[in-house]
Length: 390
Image 1: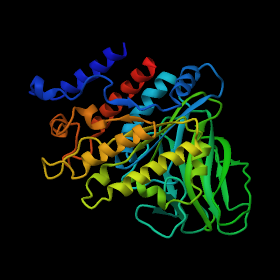
Image 2 (image 1 turned 135 degrees about the vertical axis):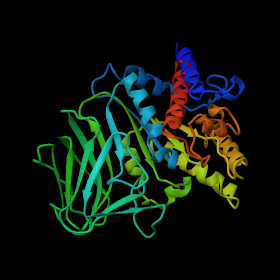
Image 3 (image 1 turned 60 degrees about the horizontal axis):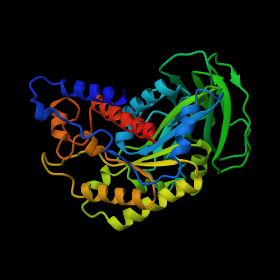
């Protein structure tokens, strides 16, 4: 049945553009040859949790994807989230940035903010960034952020805020529910240290802050609702090495997510770097995988290769193949899953065909919204078919 729907989607993609001949329109390879298991020790446990998630109260399966611009638009992860939640239940949104980031989106929420300034670990230095690499700072007292879910509901939500206070105060941060009523919150008064605040309220949620506060990522889940969460933690232009710009203890936030599957989707930006130190890249990726293993010993780890990409019209980025080969070698040595995005699209140079079909952008690097959705569908069916066979 899965194979049938998978081929149905492929046929729909093929027929999107009139006038393409049959050979030209083929954009996929052998089903599930794209997803490889190099012996991840937690796969069976992950399958069990997915299969029982609807049967157990409050059980949530958490999937966290780290990545670059392919992830930051939340088009790929958004479609994957939609498919997973349709099958296993909707437990919420997961991680979001503290305020809107220009050029980045979340398919589930919008932000309205006043008197905040945003800092990114990709472009700013000398700051103590939390997980995700974004800090929102008020420019004056009584700065406000309103978080509005795109799908209105009357349910309770659990919100966990990562923040830091610069002065000893118990009322530097306050939260208001959908009725603009204050929500009881409490937190320790330690200064200059990232901490968390958790509360339960109906959305939309309003945050009001004094000037001497820094706000990091926000975690949103439905209260007492079993199902799946798919988070997109990403930055446009990011490389895997961006983790080294975050606070030395950022992995404590990763531990708090209790992620069952961690996806690493970096590599495109590295692939354009002719001067890339491949051995340094290799060691950094290994170290990051081992950090995840130590922090989340029961989580499955999955590496996603860069999608098919071209530069100057018909030339692959100079390090693309080397990045893919290195990722695959590391997946094997570190016993993770590996999904070959380029192969799933149809192989080398297929991005030109995706452009003709309206699935890729003219830069031949990024995909259109429909393209990312089609990529996510292929990934989803590859993953489900793989899990069903285990």
